[in-house]
Amino acid sequence: MPEQLLIDLALEAVELDDADVIVLAGAPLSGLATKVRDRLPVPLVDCAAAAVKMAEGLVGLRLRKATAGGFRHPGPRDSRGLDEHLARRLAFDPTGPMPGGSTP
Image 1: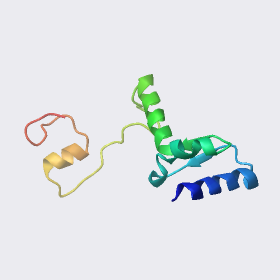
Image 2: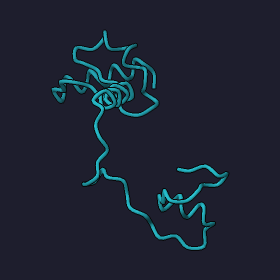
Image 3: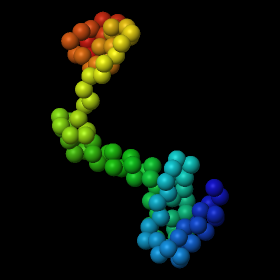
Image 4: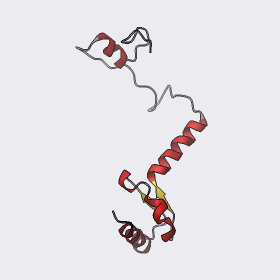
């Protein structure tokens, strides 16, 4: 998308929809915020940059791993017809050796 078209569409969103912020979503638009932000009257958020900053913040909090709720590690899944090492890895079984003799 040419930069001028992006600016025109953002200005239209500000003028017609009273947008307070423009969020550039999607990898193809990544990096464009720094190129055009000074030409817009509202903040411009680059989703890729925002996601990286969010991930850095979460790492910095040193949160413990969830043992309950939707973010807990999934339980083992039944698998049939797989090599025993692959089945053990998919089942998250820490008791046996992995292929190559390593332990999980």
